[in-house]
Image (cartoon, rainbow, N blue to C red; front, side, top):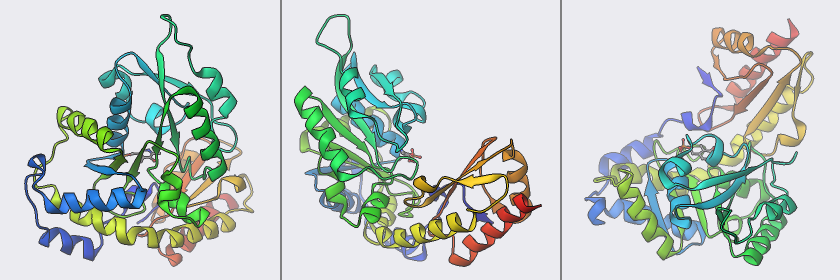
Length: 337
Ligand SMILES: *Cc1c(COP(=O)(O)O)cnc(C)c1O
């Protein structure tokens, strides 16, 4: 099957499986696992932060970040459709007693900074304490410009807030901007990076930030049941994701651009041209074609997920040039018939 549902579906490559089999391990709760320590050291260096913490998922690293920045009764500002607010089961509210202040993204996937500023609460007993701005990059495959990140930093500095990056796909943003990851992460106090998406690791995310923040996050991770023992078997694969994974992403972006182009002239469907910046292709339908398209694709060896009138396709290392073309043929046949 050609699986375009997400870049989370990548299988660990042969080098990862071999590294997992050979990994030197120890009990990571005692900080005795050399593979985890090496991964954390490398992730901190890549993001330009002092320290890093390996965790089971990006949902967990985002939650650890929110709980480490905010206390009970504090508030974070995030996008209405941001992963951390919308797709993490309300963890920050449920487990952290942290209130979200969601704001609509604009047409480019950015939180308008005047709206952010307007949402920051005054120091008044009626209000939750606004503590943190959480941004997402890439946002639905769209890249936040560096100038926007700098302006957001100036804003949070003016108001004494911290700033967290949900950088699940921050490496994709770095590739698109032809810059390094540390430049993308520089304006942020903390950054969460998924190693299990386009970077190809089977499991894991890292949270990067100051020593003090990571120390707090380590305690929360233990409390949440996320302290792992011989986690080096996972870290071994994650280290390859971190070192080799970014080199695979330009191919994903090129294949996404190709698929986008192949789908750009279909009757009854239109691609979102300005959203095609990294490894995702977004296709809108004029009618409620989603479930019929999913069924058609599945009959022809292509797995997608779609809502009634929109489909997001995600390119990744396990989709070759040829398979991207094949998927385009299958989808085009649906709309042409
Ligand atoms: C995938 C993703 C996460 C984390 O997801 P997990 O499946 O928990 O690793 C966080 N934020 C964004 C934007 C994501 O796409």
